[in-house]
Structures are given as structure tokens and as C-alpha cells.
Amino acid sequence: MSTPTVPMRRRPIIGWGLHDGLVVARRNLIQTIRVPELLFFSIVQPVIFVLLFAFVFGGAIPIPGADPSAAPDASIYRQYLMPGIFGQTVAFASAASTVGLAEDMHRGIIDRFRSLPMASGGVLLGRTFADATRQILVLTVLSITGLLIGWRINNGIVDAIYAYLLLLLFAYTVSWVGSWIGLYMPNPETAQTAGLVWLFPLTFLSNAFVPITAMPTWLQPIAQWNPISSLVLATRELFGNPTGTIGEAWPQQHPFAYTIISCVVLIAIFAPLAVRRYRRATAR
Amino acid sequence: MSDIIVAVGLVKKFGDVVALDGLDLRVPEGTVYGLLGPNGAGKTTCVRILTTLLKPDAGAATVAGFDVVKRPNAVRRVIGLTGQYAAVDEYLSGRENLRMFGDLYHLAPGYVKERSQELLERFDLADAADRSLRTYSGGMRRRLDLAASLIAKPRILFLDEPTTGLDPRSRIGLWEVIKDLVADGTTVLLTTQYLDEADQLAEDIVVIDHGRVIAHGTSDALKDQVGGDRLEVIVDGREAVVTAVEALRPLATGEVLAEVADHRVVAPVSGGSTVLVDAIRALDAAGVRVEDVALRRPTLDDVFLSLTGHAAEEES
Image 1 (cartoon, rainbow over the protein chains, first blue to last red):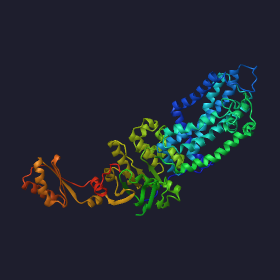
Image 2 (image 1 turned 135 degrees about the vertical axis):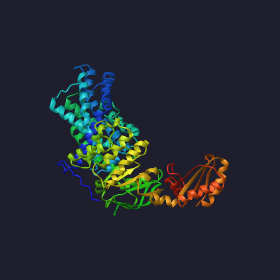
Image 3 (image 1 turned 60 degrees about the vertical axis):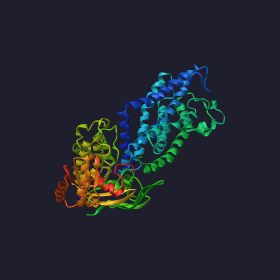
Image 4 (image 1 turned 90 degrees about the vertical axis):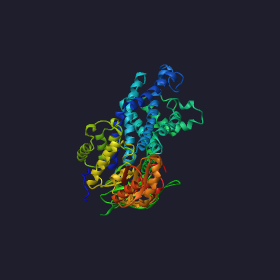
């Protein structure tokens, strides 16, 4: 019997890893469009957070350092709140990666991917890329919600673009963490919980919703070094929103640099861990 | 013909559970090879090692001459895998699924397009090609799954329980497709717990239990191993059963079994149709009225029962 020959694609300029990543990302983004319910609720959840925090806690959380005579407190809190919500929302993007990969494993599609002669990082590259890309839409809807309740971009369009890019970089980073967790999950139901559980302490032990100065003294260093705090602080500065009192720790003094360093370090740790795990992952 | 899959002494343990306990396998090129065994016998573990998804704890295997541990990507280029679940994307259409897998095999885009259309037509999915898989039936999904594993014209196709959970009509449909593939020269390694499926498709059958090969041969050879044919007689009453057993005993090559409630007597015999004539004469001489008589080949169920001491489809 002669071996059937099939015409192969020429090696693309971007390399096979990125090529495979884009193929899988396209698949994941098509899923997003085909299941509008999921997209809808992933947008509705942060919008509800905005409304709850703005109208329930809004008047009760004073922002130190803000000029009390400038406007009523609730309005200042809304300016303060929105970058916090942005930060929390992009951090929660990682849960989608956790659940998505757990589902793929459960359905046996990871087995099939692994039996293909594709780059071993391709599936994870596609997953993280698609999950971060989806955040563009989520951030757009959130920004419009913010604008409607009185949040403003005060520092011009260039700084605002930097702020959004920083948020997307962070979304991409946590997607790698979420992917790594997802590959350990025995089923999608467990992933649903495990994907979220670490995010609550991470986002609440930060300056996202309340100023760090309002926390117990022993918690403050943790909050100051939390990458979410530097992300949110950098975003506040770039949008020209009230920042509250800025802490003494280095990350608080250099939030933009610290956020980028955190992202680079986290990807350098979790991407190889996730790829290693992927090579052994199999449906059960 | 050369052996396209060779496995020697494969061992795989999951904690305390020994899934494979020194499994040997030689699959000649261009055949359908049936890997038969009950649940938990080690069939899926074997397929996962040969398709590079799992590493063996001991032993070695080559597929198309490539070592599965040392050259996994070379192996992946020549194989197709269809697992126990339809591992296709639920939200994409049939065509989009095939395009994705074709792209991931690094096939030329123009070829992927052509080959997808060809496969969709061949698997009777052309009308549903552009619909999301959520509208597909179980049988359609399995057919698409099989199409996806064929996109790169693999030399070796692994089918791990391809018809589990399908209705009889879809099963027979899938069998036809598999038969066509072999006619094209593809080597197929098929695992199944359905004995009739192995009987239908596989030329060579390996029976495994507890991670080891316990029998090997063609379907006919395995049946001969159990011994000859089965003569089945239905008599007209309970009392006649005892008389019939006595009358058939001299003709039987083994123990004559009586199922009194069904008025049925089963005797292992050899000698083909002449024994049928002898049996009817003997029964007539003993005054037994026969309602039905048949000479049948032992089924793989008989084979399995005599080899393992338990039926194929019961949990082990």
C-alpha cells in the first residue's frame, strides 16, 4: 500500500505555535458568539457590581485625599469605583479559562488536540488569547455603564488607551493562571467553583473597592503588594480618577511598572506550568 | 506484510490499579485489528499509549516505525483517533470543525476545504454541514468525529469504542463506513466490548483481560478454540427434555445442556450437517417430537465466557 500524500501548509512566518494558537482562538471566539447567553451574563455580572457598589455602598465609603468640597461623596466614589470594577472584572476573566479547559477535557476534545501534530502550547495560547479578547467587549459595556452613572475619562485618550491595554494584559496574564488550574479539574462543575474561589480574596484584598488605609494595619502590606492594587491604581491615574491615599510600598509608588513586571513574572511562571500540565492532561 | 503497530510488554499503572500488565501487540498493515475485552480490561489505556496521550511505565511501542515516547509528533502525523466520546466542538458547525482540525494538522488550506466537502458528502452530513453541532443527533456527531480523524488521510486509524451509545441503525451505518476505509488500505485498530462488532469488522482479534492478552486469532479460530458447533433443539414439552438429552448424548463432543423452562437442549457437536441428520434420527427413535432444530456457530459471547469466566458486557 502506498502512503497517501496530502498537501501540507507552508510554515507560516509567525511560526506553528502562534498559528495553532490563532486557530484555537478562532474556535473559542466562535463559541462566544454561538452562546450569547454566556456572554450576556459575563457582562451583566460586572454591571450589577457597578450598580450595587455605586448605589449601596457609594455614600458610605469615604475616599481619603479627595476634595470633599468638589462634589458630593457618592459621585467621587463612582469615579474611584470604576477602575476597581475594571480590575476585578479582568481578574475574573481567568475563571472562564478554568471552566473552558475543564469542559474541553471532560468532552475529550483535549485528547483529540493532543493526538494532533500541533504545537503543544497551541490550545492554551488560543484559550488565553480568546478569553482576553472577550474582555474588550466586556470593558466597552462596563465603560458605557460607568459613563452613565458619572464616571469620566479625565486625562485624554492616549492615557485611556494605555489604561485599557494594561487591563487587557492583566486579563491575559490571569487567563494563564486560570488555565493551569483548569487542567487539574476533574470536571466542569468543580472548575466552576475552583475557578472563582481564589479570586474573591485576591480582588477584595486590594484597593479595588475600599482604600487600603481603611484596612487593618497588618493587612495593608498585603494589599499594597497585591498586583490588583497596582493595576487599579495605575488605571485610576491613567484615567485621571481619584486614587485615595497612595501607600509607601514600591508597588504603590510605581503602579504601572509593578503591574507590568507582575504580568511578565506570572506568565513566565504559569505558562510553562500550564503547558507541562497540558502534555499530561487527559479526559477522565 | 509488515507490522505497522508493534507493542512489547506495555505496562501502565494508575496508583494501585494495573491497567496494562505486559501487553504485546502486532498489527499487520492494512487490516482491521479488534481489541476486545470487558470494561476495565485496559483497551482504552492501550489506545492512549499508542496515540501518544499516555506514557507507558514499562515496555515500548512503535507506530509506523516511530517510537511513541521518543517521536510523538511523527506518530501524530500518521494517525487519526476517534475516542469514546464524540470529541468535536459542540458550538461549531460540521464544516468549521473539519476546518479547525485540518488547520491543526497543518494541511494546505485549499486542501482542507476540498477534503472537508468530500468527507461531509461521504458521511452523509452535507445537508447539515453549516449547522451548529447542537442540532446534530448522536449518530451524526460520531460520523463527524470519524470524518475529523480522517481529514489528513491517516495511515492508521484508532477507533476506541466507536459505536458505544449509538442506536442499532447508526451502528450499522458506522460499520459500513469503517469497512469502506479498510478497502482504501487504512489500518484500523478497533476496541470494542460488543462482540458482534468485532465479528463484523475485525479480521484479527485480540482478547484482553486484566491488561493482558488472553487469546488471539481470527473470529473463526477463536470460535473453533471453544470447540465446534452448537446443536440447538426445541422439544414439545418438559418431559421430552430429559429424553432428548439422553438421545443426543452419544452425538455430543461435550456436556449436553438442558434449559427445561424453554424446552431447549444445546449440545456441542462436530461434523457439520451430517450430525444434524443423525440427531433428528436419534430423537425420532427416542420418540421425541421436535419443534425446532438448528445448528449454529458459537458466538463470540461463547468464546468470551469460556476464556474469561465472565460475560463481556458485565462490569469487571
